[in-house]
Image (cartoon, rainbow, N blue to C red; front, side):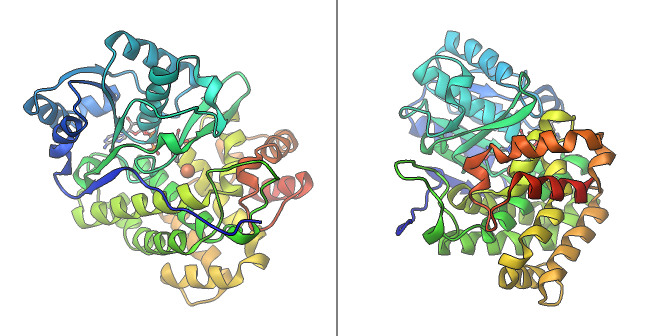
Length: 394
Ligand SMILES: NC(=O)c1ccc[n+]([C@@H]2O[C@H](COP(=O)([O-])OP(=O)(O)OC[C@H]3O[C@@H](n4cnc5c(N)ncnc54)[C@H](O)[C@@H]3O)[C@@H](O)[C@H]2O)c1
Ligand SMILES: [Fe+2]
């Protein structure tokens, strides 16, 4: 049983329109001379990299760009990126992009400091010490990776998404500029936005900190529901409920983009201290089996897991319903999420994304094995119960 909880964030969070202009100064604060930037071709084409480049140049930094970032990156991609970075030997690693590029930047910082291969650091608490400083500049309103202690990768050998969790992965600076998300196409906005909502709902309805089922001698970066996690999750759910539809329907709605940026970062503060639960644990094997974005997979599964958790979290669900603009009844929270899914175009069913019925049992078994996440769920689930949730979602 736990009796204490802690709350961590990025070393410094800079939030607001044109915050990106402070990237160079942030790097200088770290006494950096050489910056290694992880981004991708889409972002360079969309002009999102440009203000970062200007800021680094104005601050007099020498920089090298790795433009090979890919959505849902593999462990192999992170190894390739780190090999390029090692030749440059930077003082700081800057992730410019959605969760995918930010996570590759984090792994690069780990490998620069400790050597080895990406696969060596997968799991909870495997990073042995401080890493090369990381600055994260999110360009989606989604993952919260800019403040989180996590990084996620596709393990192509085992067909599963997998994660690295370590307090050393919290970026030294998170620079959140809502204007960088304006070029996000509707699908990226919808998928990353519902990922953020999933983070907030999973954190708000997680197992209590005092009942966190941690085996003796084991440590975890996730620690269950606590008051500061609740405060951030509540704010995130309200913001995402208010602004996600608007951001998807009208990408240039700056008020909506700003609300979503704050919602995603506060959801990141919540989940990265409390934990994510069964939605994420089920999405990991689903995302490894078929090409679906992490956000779309989570959004698809979210109402089905909420229904499973409902008996344990009725009061919380009633509040969530209200925050999403519905009457304060537990079932209404599920309906609100279903409605949101439909409005922003998240796939309804597992069969819609190419999952075959015969795969469900294997997916349930793989989910059951992801203990660092399943134990955060307020209601423990057997393999059979997990398969039941997948059947409902199929
Ligand atoms: N580290 C964490 O804490 C954490 C948390 C949740 C999810 N994740 C991981 O993050 C990844 C998903 O990240 P994501 O949802 O942010 O999407 P993403 O980073 O995969 O980006 C999706 C696509 O959108 C494009 N894009 C991003 N920003 C854009 C912009 N402003 N304009 C135009 N195009 C843009 C990218 O180039 C990419 O092609 C997954 O791998 C997921 O597992 C990590
Ligand atoms: Fe997520």
